[in-house]
Length: 511
Ligand SMILES: OC[C@H]1O[C@](O)(CO)[C@@H](O)[C@@H]1O
Image 1: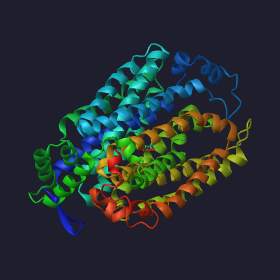
Image 2: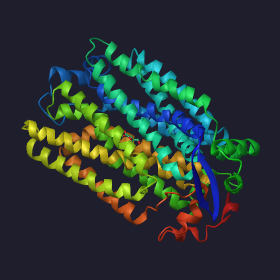
Image 3: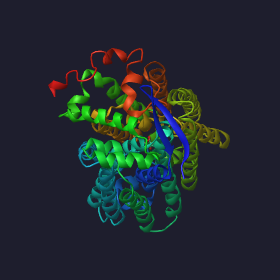
């Protein structure tokens, strides 16, 4: 069975591609790499709000929150760097691991890299769920971080390469959809386990990460590698056979020729990271790095990591706080589906621009309400205003979920030429995790000092990134992945100046 017929024009030649079941199933399996990432993002906020967890690993914070040393300072009671290390160690490990992952995606392939990620995850989950002391807990988090580094490197590339051009955006967004499902799953688990007395609550929360870890591992065993990766590693016959299989047609010559051309350019590159900095490759690098910084500077993880903490800071009871976190998770998932549906129809830019406005205004409203109603030692947030804050947070999350969330991964995975794709993706993941880390590390401190102003801070960033999209982000909808240089970058009003002298093998001798 194969639905639809794609005729993406490349250099005037048509690529034939059906939407085959093998592409859909492989994409769904590979995208489970996002589940694990999302689960880890979602689980830490709830776990660090569990008294038994704090008592065992962070007794000082436990004293402050439960016993009440600073209980009355609404904005500062959770501020404790040690607690943030639990959240952020994963990201530090992940951003380091991604450089190794760049090597494995290039030399071993996308599929083995996903398998490596799965194995890291499984060991990390076991250590976390069985943790006896802080060292064991943090070691587990570091291994989970390595899993994130390897998975986030391999999965977006796998999805963008295996997809027929006309549904590439939608398929790639499956990764982010899984991230959001993972976050929601973790929030639901936390909601249930927070009611369990003793240590079993947090152990169960951390241990259930085993489910997504197993899914990714099994998924990675079952999928076939992408034709791009097979050709890149010199396995031409296999690459062509896989291309025929996934495109559901024997007529794959034009696309295969594109792959051969891209791979012969890629072969000349000896130092992929140095090559990234060459003039002709700078636009992709700059755009990919900017997108990651911007994605995190939307402030999304301030909400995702600390929603339970934030809601309890705002005076919601501990149960209501988890409830609110589940609510934001439940907005995140369906809104990502909107992106899957729209991204290949209206394009990347429309989604980013529209959502930018939506995020900007919702953050502004939150800042105003909190600024008026919540001061250091008094919390006059009436029910009506509390509901307004939650509704605005949901409005903001929805906008993020159909724009910066998925597109932050999609665009970098499709704009780099094959010669710099692995290295480019590695820098992408690294910058994403670095800024996730910085926000995770700084948020509680920022909340304590900026107070409601934190939302003004993030909304100013949203304004800057929306202007960036308006002027500097080219549209990549419906462009075959190995054709971006000719059809996107060379035609862009600003970036074209980097392409003129960068044609073909310019400077390649330098390598
Ligand atoms: O859905 C929100 C989540 O999406 C990400 O931006 C990843 O794409 C995470 O950093 C964030 O926690």
